[in-house]
Length: 639
Picture 1 (cartoon, rainbow, N blue to C red):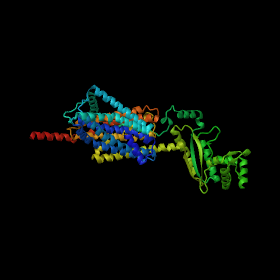
Picture 2 (cartoon, rainbow, N blue to C red):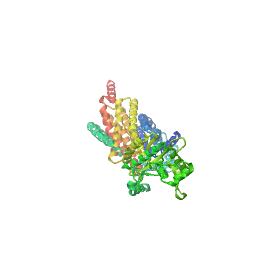
Picture 3 (cartoon, rainbow, N blue to C red):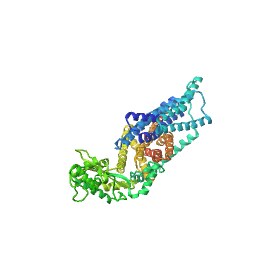
Picture 4 (tube, rainbow, N blue to C red):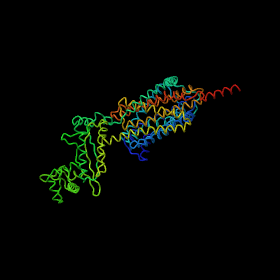
């Protein structure tokens, strides 16, 4: 349902489909969706264990967690919308689509899911049947596996194969795992005509659940009891992470996006192996101006010759430095062919001369005449054959009457898999083009072509990362200050986000990951996940402070409730993304591996670092529960 909402709303607002909207956003939203449903349902289950009926448990539980869910939804949306500062259209669409997905996840998984769970629990209770024992446990496990498998398969089909088949699969899964059980329970209720009875006693936890709760509690309490050491170690690790993260450079390699065993990558390897430094990926110099000026043509010719002095530009086996036709070699072909010169003179009455023997006509009129003739008739050669066809000449010199002409100089750059090679070549070529652009007859002389376009995109991706992260963190901090009405708790809640981002990018640099379009977006996702986890822990701690006599008791109860929910949410997400990490396409594999790592780091920050920070900024006197107990004790003594 979440995927259907995302695709439908994205289509309504006009977001273009593509890698980000159709694949990356739906996969990413699994993390935040799981977080919403785990916290809402877990809080509901906590109240059920306290002895409340399903309906009352939902009211109390949802009331307790709704503020945190709303705050998480708002902060997540801000984090993703910060990507609107990017100049790259795909990243802008990612920000919009992710914000839509967060809102959809909040409604469907944060609100509808616990209501549905409550209704099923009610039906189970009033049916009069006993859902206990090994058989019931086995059925629950098999049902969970079935739901995960069916919905996971449906989502994959919906995203990657066929939308209609995916929707049908989802509907069938919903019918099998929700429709049929609910119908069965409703029919059982009608037959027994049982009345709903509130639960009158607390429900005991299973040994496994109790053990997990105790484990999380022990981790949090141990960390907070050694807060100074934990915070010092965190500061050292973060400083090292920032040091390595700043060394992370944007790079591009097809092996980062496609299977190394695919035909395309193997073909590129063969080309590199056999061509070597005699060829490479085409770079293009785009030149516009008055290309009938002999001095301008001479300046362009000098630019071409200067490319020979640049190490990162390939010289072809024939000795040429350029490939294809351009204004210079087209004129050279015309001037070196007496048959063509004679044909031009016979057709126009204008003799093309080259007194300085530089293979460039001596006057503007001669160059314009040569171009006009060749664009219409081609360049004739011996036996009446054309050396150059008219369309080839028109491709070399783009000209329209009354407007400036333009030409492209195409050269080859070997080894462009290494982004440093492209950067080095660009740094060497751009100053020469700037000198060429200063010529009076040339208005534009710029560098383009796939390697340099990619370089600009990677630079824009890096700038997006450097601008969107501060925007997201600043906006989230302002939002938290306004909603929490506490500067210290807002700052403490945001700190783990910065830690997660620093740790993640430091690990990326150490483990050899590159900064590209996909990995840069993980920064935005890490803010969303990190702030979710932090908000839930901080809000639960503040809530427990109002009901407990000490900070330690408050953090202990927060860890037993929200801490366990965080662990469950993180574990389910990590498993899914670890599986994605084994995908054959390196792009999805690296995305899965890094996202799983990021979720683990966010969990560490929220269960170990954040409790220490909360204890550090909270005074013992802030525990309102102590005053409450004193008042109760006083009232009892007076009574």
